[in-house]
Length: 209
Image (cartoon, rainbow, N blue to C red; front, top):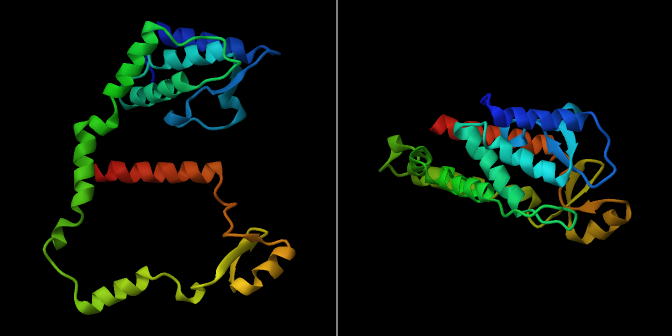
């Protein structure tokens, strides 16, 4: 995943130093193995850096990665360049910074032939059924499915203790007094859930390609 060059050595030295100290000044949390490369939120993958160190680390990451991984860290670095804070004590005017940001634009996956071919295949759909038409009976079945759950039509969703239920509009206020909240329960959508969803979506894209 990484190239063994002087930039990686500089990067590793900064991380090692940061692990063995305690700072009282303003710091920022950094993922040692970036999340865009599969890094986790575990404590052993986190380190506190000064704002300047955090910027330098992201810049160095662009110098010892290659291929798709390099594009991902370039995008992350570009995002770092857009961050603003009164507590950040560095100015992003470096010629190197400008060069890396330009490369991020040039390596954008939206411009690659591979992505265009993948997107084209997805837009074509099922070519085996191209030119065929559904029977009226099939169309009616599809229309019924698209209508959704007719049993909850006109009902209002409320939730409590991780469970959702649909009730009649005139009963909503009574349930709210009992501690219910409006809408469906979304507590299951955690950071881990979103990460799993992202990985599954990425896997589907790769399968199409």
